[in-house]
Length: 329
Ligand code: NDP
Image (tube, rainbow, N blue to C red; front, top):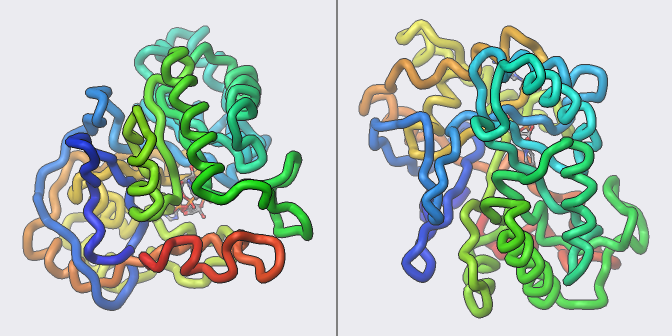
């Protein structure tokens, strides 16, 4: 991400939280405030646990076990989405945990995301209902617009001809969709609402009509999303992460996650391996020194997932990746 981007946006006197991605070699700027707590307070006063389990590309058949291991191991935040196509199994795992008395619904933070083919004034309610049915929950803690990319009904990925809904501009589409999200918040079915993959420019545009300021603009892939989505750089192999990790007796993954937490952000590591799930939660019991945060400051911040699957010369609003991010990197 561009070094000028703050982790908390301020709009109309309220803050929009950003969950940050990973880091790679190069130039960049990171703050080192040294402090971290187990929760983040959103602009509506709600408390979101800083470490959440990611569930993207956690395949059916294993995602339930990952959620089970995570909650039994102390996670209280699960990051889901309609388009991960695994919410039913996540829901089954949660029900089992509730029934066994491992955790209560009110002690968990569950996020999900509105998929691109359900934008507009009415469709968001239908997408939310499907998600709630699959997760077997009465409400979400956080509901996000997944991408500023309207698609025709029934489309997910990969990119296909005619999948983009170009009947409205991005601005109009976002306005209609956000106003539906506000009604969802009013209904209590989502206690906080926000966005994901939005540039600062798109957030600014929303301020022309938003009655509710987004509580979160989700960024992600705090471990560099290695092994998924064709990403070729293995962040966790970076020698600086190894070197700093050795100093604290921590793994490169823990250093990367701790950096995110110490920056004041929440992090959403995904793993389906019980040992890693456990390892990724152990980031609140050590602090990186100012010196080490400065070392990490020298590394470039980048978006591992560029959203290039939404870039298309003929069909999409976005002809190049810079258009999607409004030139913000
Ligand atoms: P992560 O950065 O969390 O990396 C996941 C990869 O790292 C997997 O290959 C995983 O393998 C591996 N891994 C996990 N823990 C460790 C460890 N301790 N040591 C070594 N390797 C490890 O990638 P994601 O892209 O999944 O991002 C995290 C979450 O963010 C997603 O799951 C999703 O919930 C959210 N997200 C949201 C997006 C959005 O558009 N809003 C887009 C992308 C992600 P294994 O499972 O085999 O352990």
